[in-house]
Image (cartoon, rainbow, N blue to C red; front, top):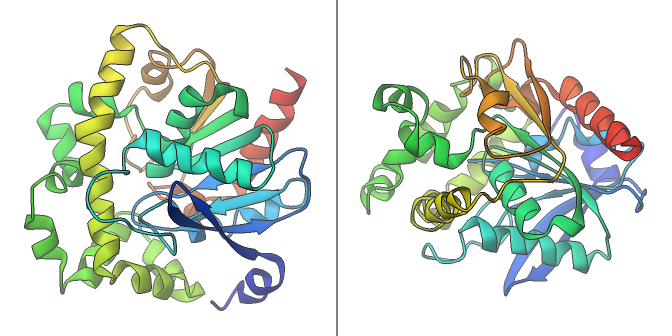
Length: 303
């Protein structure tokens, strides 16, 4: 990478942890063990999503940016087993134990936000607060959006569920597919190619086990996570952990009553829309994201 290669090589420490019989890759920066932050990326990315956010956070906090199972340089088991969000949240729980951390603030974008939500439900005593960036509850997407709404911004949620066909169409066209995804945010692809992160995203995405794992992620969401949330909602189980939401005015949540929707699933939510921003919020608007995370942690500690 060019613009920030020196920072990454000198300040960011790469590590691996054996959790749930897989190797999980992460990047560590900062030293404040008392107030750790764990960052979880989305599809189709890796820890690099946070490369411009970490320098702001590491001044006050220990920061751990993780490659989720199936992504980046973490292991990518075959099949859908293990890609349900409870197992992926368990990976993070085991990583926290491996690093000897106590309570963490957990911030996720896209698929990482879905892991963060599950983590807060499964391990409420281990998390001080969570941030969910540019997502709505998965059950809302499946059960409340019209087909027309879903077709515009969530077409891949259906496409990825089709057996075998996505693999056949992506193979040999990995770069085309990846470019199409990133072009949803104007100017993002140029940024990725200018700072060197595009090459790394593409390096990983061209590995067949990577896009197969990403498809398994979406399939496990439909097969395992969705029925679980439907049952928990019917039983009145709500997210109690203090939660903040951020979303882009031009992203997937544009035009949706985001806070109202999340208040049906969570007891303590706050957040705001970020202007001049699409779906890839941490890369498009890293400074406002960083500022909001730090503000949330300070206010949450006082509360």
